[in-house]
Length: 526
Image 1 (cartoon, one colour):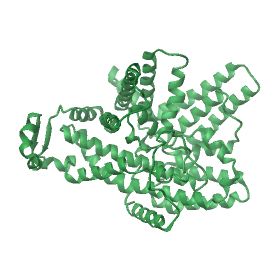
Image 2 (cartoon, rainbow, N blue to C red):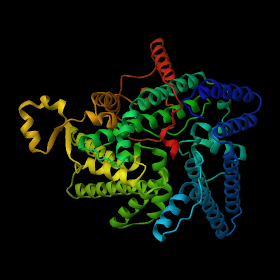
Image 3 (cartoon, one colour):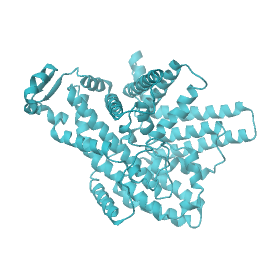
Image 4 (cartoon, rainbow, N blue to C red):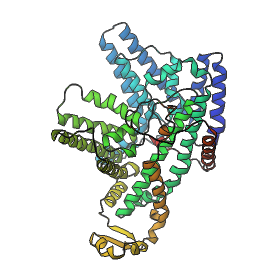
């Protein structure tokens, strides 16, 4: 079931909410159990055959975690705890490996040894990457002695809770499970409901109007590359920009809808998206983009690899390995591995640059507006280039897209634009830019004024307007897991007044009207 669907908005969400609060008046335990059942129904709406897989994974991991906690409390030899942890990790990663990576592995084996082995079609269960990583973190924390005794109902709700189940955020037990024990969440909170509805419909607008509005342009650019036809320099970059804008509003919209929908129940989710395109370097980008995944990779991959004092080359190697894991988490394919490797390379270069600046005695806490602008522009250029591998389904198409971005397929502009340059035309030509009749390619690549206008509008919203969390800054709809941007000030602050009510009602109506078809969120694929 999609957040951006009429059955979810007008049936599932209100019915689940009313029954939850009705039961909560008499029994918190049964109210929590109801939310588990409702979340399983939400998950099974797509494919009920995978409900037993999710339930089995929950029971198994809870049992392993409880065993580790019990062993530590009884001060049993650490060997048992290590055995339990290893068993849990092997089973979790094996399930994830089978459903997500088995066919990719088999394809490469067949290519190497010339065989034709086939595992058949394996349908990827929705959200398996998210609930697997969530449970791996739970087991590791149990082994580290950071887990208290949790009852099974709260643990099951922690994993299945529908606002995060399909596409994140990746939850941490310390943030979420204690909230289930608070009496306040089982009674309607009108302030939370008002804020939650506002955030939810802002997210719906982002998805159905903005993300889905620019999606056709991104699709046509990348489809052109997928056909094996070369894109010129400006076509490739415009295609990359269209996709990163689609991805921005798609993921931002989902994150808002998850936070808003959860707040209706009085439960705050961690912030997972905070204007990443405003980042001035790649480190800051990853602190703002898919923040809970970045946190998981830092705490459960990078930190274990970097225990103790490490030489600089080892730290950079660990960064690269961590980002390879991040790339592979996003999907099974060489293009995702290359995407992860690119970001590992970016982080390494940034680490070296920071060391050089420190050695020159520069103050890392201060920068000029020009420095911030250049840093943001360079970060975005690097990210857009990496998108050629992230978005494209096959490696050949990704390489064609990347070659186009590097100008290896030529640099051409529509001949209709030639008059705009006037006397500068010889200079433009000397730089290798030609003017060609691209009309025959417009329908294929979307290289037209409509695409450029759409990019301009969305770029203004991204870089010059406050994000949802800043607009709702007085009411803290999400857990404050982001510590940057402390000096951000905006005059556009939401208040429960008639003016804002009209604005949000309008945004909600437009967002609802634009639900014209079933449009999945991009992160459903992971």
